[in-house]
Length: 74
Image (spheres, one colour):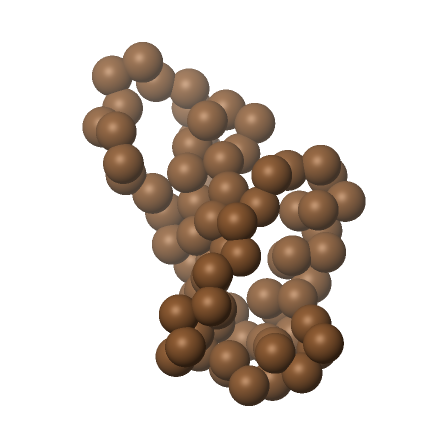
C-alpha cells in the first residue's frame, strides 16, 4: 500500500485494520514508541486505536478480542 499527502483527500476518511489481541497490543506499543498521538477507544465490544500517520492519513486498528486486550492492558 502506498499512502500520499493529498490536499484534495476527503475529510473524515480512514483506513481500518483488524487484528487479534496480541497484534493490537504490539501495534499500540509500536505506535507509542514512534511518538504518534493515539486515541484508545473501548467500544464495549471491541477496542480501537485511532491515529494519524506522518502524512496526515487517518487510521484505525480494531480488535474484537476485547477481554484479552483488557487483561493485557491492565
